[in-house]
Amino acid sequence: MINIYEVQETNEMIEKENLDVRTITLGISLLDCISSDLDEVKKNIYEKITTVAKDLVATGEYIEKEYGIPIVNKRISVTPIALVGGAACKSPEDFTEIAKVLDKAAKEVGVNFLGGYSALVSKGMTKADELLIRSIPEALKCTERVCSSVNLGSTKTGINMDAVRLMGEIVLKTAEATKENDSLGCAKLVVFCNAPDDNPFMAGAFHGVTEADAIINVGVSGPGVVKNALEKVRGESFEVLCETIKKTAFKVTRVGQLVAKEASQMLGVPFGIIDLSLAPTPAVGDSVADILTEIGVERPGAPGTTAALALLNDQVKKGGVMASSYVGGLSGAFIPVSEDQGMIDAVEAGALTLEKLEAMTCVCSVGLDMIAIPGDTKATTIAGVIADEMAIGMVNQKTTAVRIIPVIGKGVGETVEFGGLLGYAPIMPVNSFSSDNFVNRTGRIPAPIHSFKN
Image (cartoon, rainbow, N blue to C red):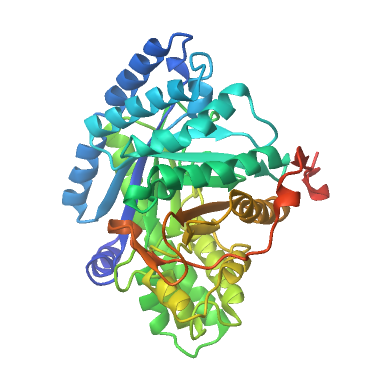
């Protein structure tokens, strides 16, 4: 139960410190939609989503009104479509037809985004996996709400370098396909190592095959709340600093737990997990970069930044797991560039580079996120960046990801406006030396020695 003091404290966090429930994500299994007939698959998918999710948005809006807790997004995740469409789809165009149906269903039920236009290829690609991947540029061009993800590696299986090389090409083709909107399609495309089955955040959400027929996952975010709490303990020891972050994360997670349980009960869908992730927005006072500054670095990127982020991420997780028995997803600190005003400022000041961001991904929740690069960057260079990030995830037994945006027609020194929660970003320089010979090798990088846990 939440006592009256916690209610008052929560109200203050919402009103003054940008606390919000970032998303209620309804995971829906589409395995029972499989057929060898494409028209049948499309019909089954549309009916399943519009039936199971018909009350999702209304439920979220009711909880917002009843409890006064902002719920920014209502979203859906579905079974990876490479699995669902494999029997019926014989070409990339067939998969694109499914993407259009997913978009239509998402619009019908009123959700912001639908994730799961995905393939899981950490050890190898089926024909269906490859067809779906090759369909991604067109699928993201002709839809508004569909998000795509591809899992390219894991600690258990290694890194599928054939898929990494292909995804370098696909990212560039997606940028080209959506160049009229500053290559915005790439903002809805993410590649993973060790992708979790229960992530409620876009663009990487999908409904894992180990999940129930339907599940409610809630993502809660409050970087402004953490920043405000740390302002009160300036100059104190690391022990006080850590305790403050942990206690604050506990309170934030409790809000998510309340919303998740209420939504689960109202929809008659089991509660899955709470994802406590400090996910910033471009709004002033809603920045992970500002937390790092409050911890003590002048700008993100300064010496000490990686240590500060490691401390933050760990204490967030510790506070979360004390507040809920079912903390999952990504849970920790996100470091997207375009969505965080403090990160943008650090890049523009010259404090933060792509290489420093890569170092920071060793200890954050996800990876290289919402980073704009020159549109003339080679596909093999993008694949090399992806391979580096996959290696960090594989070796460190953590989730890592890349959501990188080569902005066609723009170069270093220019900026790109994405709008809304996606913000804007300065175009960052990329190392110009070639990785062609490395990326063009075929096969896979084997799993590390510590993957053998049996």
